[in-house]
Length: 281
Ligand code: DGL
Image (cartoon, rainbow, N blue to C red; front, side, top):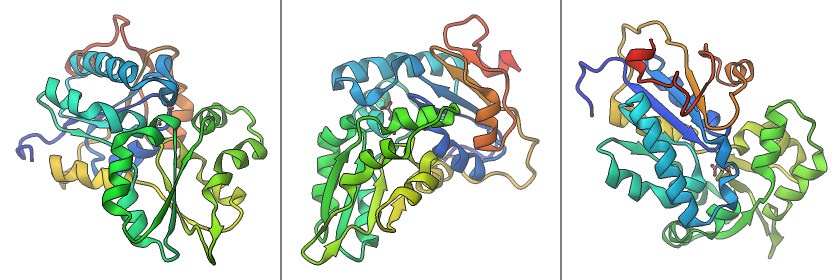
């Protein structure tokens, strides 16, 4: 835990796109006093299509530059596709706490009554050894179906950008999650990509039958408070959230609506304006 003399830590939340905002809003709930930077590597999106080697190289490069620019006290990798392969190399390079986001197999299997659980994820997360290990470790009582959704993260990006996304396109991506066999049907679906909770209303509406959708964001927020401690009682006013991306400026109005916080004008990584927080504020 950091010393209590660290009242307003800088927290960097990182994803390939807007998906990490589903994690951001939970972390911001538990540490509203923190100075937040939300960073999206939109130039590299979608991470689900990259080889492991390309992804490890890319995330190390981009997160390394972000750390140098904003000097965070803690980094949240709000991306399953990255966390399931890149955390060891990030931890080896930086003396900082990293909180990852990985498929919530354990709580899902513990909660399932039917014993049928599906894990909805990007193709990258689905093929990871890390994911296979989680299933081996935590699914003893459960039949787990791994469902690669090649387009769902991109559909979430489109919907968040205000473009129309057909119900059928979403239905096709989630359909394999719903398994009914041997008198038991899927009752729990793990949202193992941070983009998916942002489509939650539509997932619920388009599901062929009701299921519990497991979103890991509250557990990630708990881990952040374990590492940084809880927010102090005498909260400083919210600092505007810094938004940094690698290709196009993030749409600050939309981000502010999703996270319910004030945001600063968007910045592009590599542009001269992206300086350490102390120098920028
Ligand atoms: N949001 C990311 C995740 O949690 C993935 C999206 C992408 O393919 O870039 O896996």
